[in-house]
Image 1 (spheres, rainbow, N blue to C red):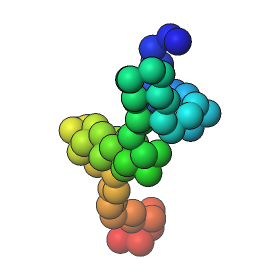
Image 2: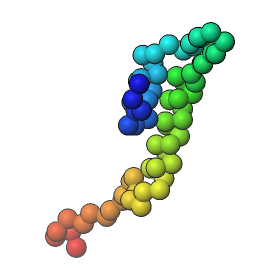
Image 3: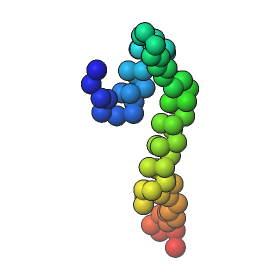
Image 4: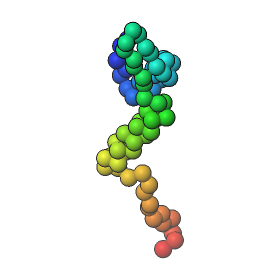
Length: 67
């Protein structure tokens, strides 16, 4: 199976696959989808916090002729 390019692709791929797989004496279990979504939100908030632009900007508008 190919490596996902983004976190969203990884979450979608894991949601479509089984939660637990057991072959012979080996067992593999994925992280819970809720935990993956929380990790994605955390990473997105870290990226947003690093941006130099502001999310909200205030400007004073003075119409012409208002003195």
